[in-house]
Amino acid sequence: MLAVNEDRIASAVSRLGSENAFEVLARARVLESEGRRIVHMEIGEPDFDTPEHIKQAAIDALHDSHTHYSPSAGIPELRATIAEYASKFRGIEPAYDPENVVVGPGAKPIIWNLLSSILNPGDAFVYFDPAYPAYASAASYLQADVQAIPLLEERNWRMDLDELAQRVGPKTKAIVINSPHNPTGGVLTPGDLERIADIARRNDVLVIADEIYSRNFYLDSEFVSIASLPGMRERTVIVDGFSKSYAMTGWRLGYAIAPKELAKVVTLFNNNTFSCVATFVQRAGIAALTGPDEPVRHMNATFRERRDRLVSGLNAIPGLSCTLPEGAFYAFPNVTKVARDDRALARFMLEEAGVACTGGSAFGAAGKGYLRFSYAASLDDIDYALERIAKTLPQFTER
Ligand SMILES: Cc1ncc(COP(=O)(O)O)c(C=O)c1O
Image 1 (cartoon, rainbow, N blue to C red):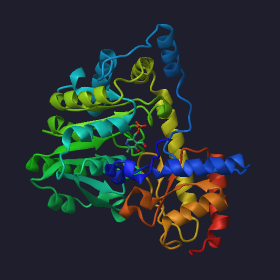
Image 2: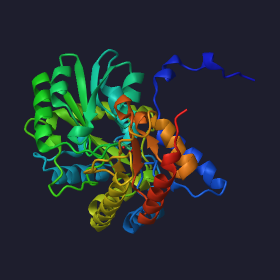
Image 3: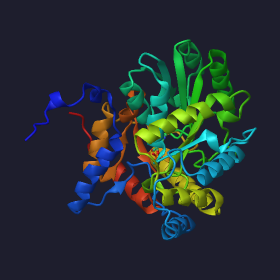
Image 4: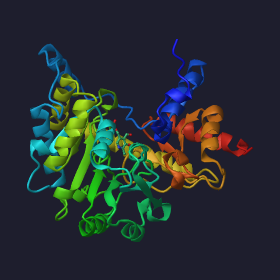
């Protein structure tokens, strides 16, 4: 039998990161199987059911035999629907064409294929820290020079734009932004976006705008996309998907909207990796974007209520402090007064309090000293979690 020892594994694998939330989930499931009550606040997925009209569209598509391969960029009807929806929602003019759109099984593989399309070894790739881990993982794998701009709690988790201006230069291939932001819930202001656009234009750099939380937005103002600013339509790639807005995480459906030449290259990577997305799932995506918007608004109103309950509850616990997230569905409390090692505290929370959450340093060095709680949990669960945290935290000791 072939022995698969370390020598047989490609050395490039050592450059891959991973999403710690999935590891926490696995341990939480073990504890549950032993009969423990666990509140799941580790994983970034809405706890709502996928809206009925979307499920029905997939069922109808199955009955209509939409069960075969489809084009690697997505079925034309979905690409056209996304182009129209995304242009209208973001006020993009002229509107995107279907050829700008590339569909994938979730935004995550689209991120991988997008970065594979643009990064040469040594290219500078500027993103932010803390961050959703997929960016640094793919860019490091591709041997880019990965440069992180720290996000600042005192700026309500927006980046220091003077530092960004200094960092971006002739070697910079792309800047990634993610607003609303995972893991902090921070939202870039229109002024921030203007400044980032200015930096991108002056340095002739591509901006990747991960807007997967654009519908999970709690400010009274409208969501603003950097792609809608002057001169930015042609130098922005929007990354978006159905997981967060429509509670469709398990369906696996996401997309990029890119300049057409780049969209073709991403499609080539799609062709070489997953070939295409399940056709009936794409049909369900059309129903999501063209059907009633009420379920999305309902989910967001509920998230907002939970956010308020969780954040005020966390701030009432001695030693913890938490800024008010303006989007997404995460709270990112500062725990530096009670722990040096946030991951150890996250483990303690799971094992002792029965609250599954993620250590902030799993999202990068600047996340050290924070925990991430996803508030995709019921108000009852949130109350229970807060009670358990308040009760057990005084027993936390660092070894
Ligand atoms: C910022 C960000 N981008 C992209 C994704 C990928 O989502 P999916 O692959 O489910 O579309 C996530 C998921 O957590 C995310 O938080």
